Image (tube, rainbow, N blue to C red; front, side, top):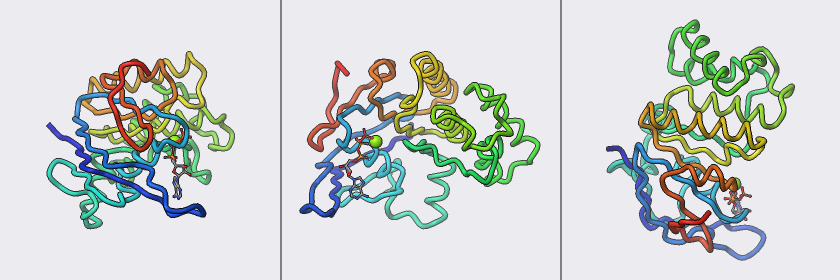
Length: 227
Ligand SMILES: Nc1ncnc2c1ncn2[C@@H]1O[C@H](COP(=O)(O)OP(=O)(O)OP(=O)(O)O)[C@@H](O)[C@H]1O
Ligand SMILES: [Mg+2]
């Protein structure tokens, strides 16, 4: 079984204030096939933790292992495989490319993987249907609401059927009913594909549906039973 292992991970930022340590000595093993919620107050470091796992930021100390391999020692080819072939990161803000329409945004991972354009288009349309955006395929991202942009970004993140999906507040801009259908989609992808799901969330209903609930507070990651 594939794992992502955090071993004594700490993260500090040097800002206008004195150096502050945001994450302290976090050790945890995330396993493929399981679902995890990371909750915690705004500013507690949830997005930072997901960025570290994705390798788009580096820990100040400690290691993050993909199976036995330290992701921070990867060369470009190894990192490309990790970020495009293994994990997928859904950022808190959608970051859709405004020069492309919604369908083309969702097609990006398939085109990077050099799949045939017609197949990529068909797969992307199916995903847009699953997130309820079939009517917006040819819209420009700026013509979508915040929640619709977030759902388009989720379709893009799911395109490559990642082994680990890191989703930063995937229901953050959604009403309860749409949020519920997105939670259902995430969980069915997790079950069907054996995908691990790590969601950062303030949404207690979403957190309650994950196998394991963790809470970040004072830089420490702890198991919690009540979200
Ligand atoms: N690149 C950076 N440089 C300096 N400080 C940063 C940087 N990135 C994050 N921080 C600080 O780290 C803290 C945690 O930020 P983070 O975005 O991880 O919190 P969060 O738990 O995701 O919050 P929210 O629930 O509001 O999304 C914040 O105080 C933020 O200002
Ligand atoms: Mg955040």
